[in-house]
Amino acid sequence: MRTPLPAPVLGALALTLLSAPAARAAPPDLRGFEVGADLGVGWVRSSASRNGFSQAVNGLGAAHALSVSYGDRPGLMLGLEYWGTVVYGPDLETVAPSSGSGLGFHAWGFGPRLRWMLPSGVFAAATPSVTRVSLSDNDQAGFEWEWGLGLRLAAGKVWLAGERWTLGVAGAGQLSFNQQAETASPRWRNLGLGLVMTAGWR
Image (cartoon, rainbow, N blue to C red):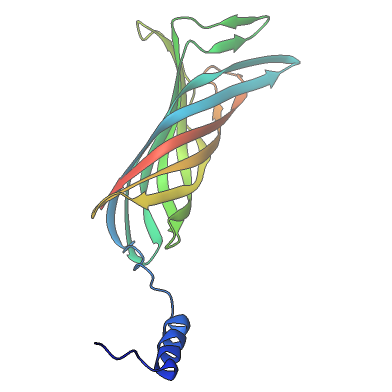
């Protein structure tokens, strides 16, 4: 028959267990190279006004982004990013609202990307960008706005999905200004919002 442990010994063991710090998983290594991709739903609106006459193009479409980044400090990464929103059949607002059936509207940009991520996976990113906007039909006939400047912001959270993979969700916003190519044409303001799934490989 086993002899039960004395009460003082049991009390000492219980006190040791209660006072021990909780075990925590090591935070992921957020340094090195990373290739990332975003894909989701986005809304974009381009508008301009001149001499009391307003016009706009807007609609829901596919928001997407591709990036390559590197960081040698935990959580901080610097890289390059391409982003865009493609809308098929946007709404046109000129003299009277109408549908741009058969038209494709594309607002996009690229530039340096700075991202800060906490060990929990919560992150924020900013991409100052050179931007472009285009409107075309199925035969690729249409016009493009001139190159402009803009900014994309994103914030969300990612989770480890494997030794090298991360998956997550993020909200993104973009703002840019582009001049219409024709002489004496107005400058257009382009505003976009999106909800995307994000994936990374390092």
